[in-house]
Amino acid sequence: MRFPSPLVPARFLRRRQRFLAEVELPDGRRTWVHVPNSGALTGCAAPGLEILLTADGRPGRKTSHTWRFSRAPGGWTCIDTLAPNRLVAAALAGEGLPGVPRPLSFRPEAPLASEARLDFGGDLGGRLLFVEVKSVTWVEDGVALFPDGVTSRGRRHLTELAALAAQGHEVWQVFVVQREDARLFRAAHRVDPAYARQLKQTAANGLNILVISEKVDPPHITLASTLPFDLSFPSE
Image (cartoon, rainbow, N blue to C red; front, side, top):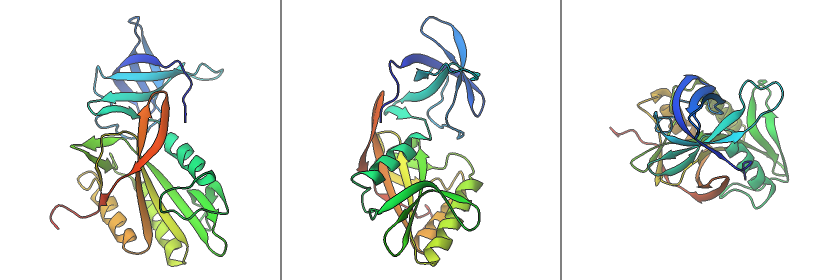
């Protein structure tokens, strides 16, 4: 996947709300840019941090640029939460994802009987495949952590996946780590212990988990290598 280039360098200043941040451009001008990530962006939004933008001046937009990358101590991080879905869609349509059965066909935004939706649904020829994708941008000491904020939406997705697994369907939670400095994935139990417990319980009852990192070379990002995961709590 390739973002439009040339990318525009800037310095992060502050975040006014979830989807709006103030940055400083190379010529010293300050401007507001769109933030394609509703999370806390832990480790990716320190004042003065080097970031990269795309120019997106389209009619009707309130901002002329979108924040795409942050340079953390471990290298570049893609902060765009839609990017992992695009990468996973390309993989499902091509060579597939490691360990995930290749569907005969698939569709994004798969509707469920509960009127909820999951990121992808596919036909395995006799049973169904469901895939939910989460973007991971937080890494500490080589450990990728999700979520970086309390996620009731993430827990609802786990509930839906658990119900589908109980019906005999193939269900996968895919965590895409959007940086290259992670060696292991854990649920962020300190931030959202309820999510961490539910992820562990759902994994014990039919949920398959794939953690895969990106190679990040702005403006390019690609799916790279799988990562191990540990769902235990520190006291266990």
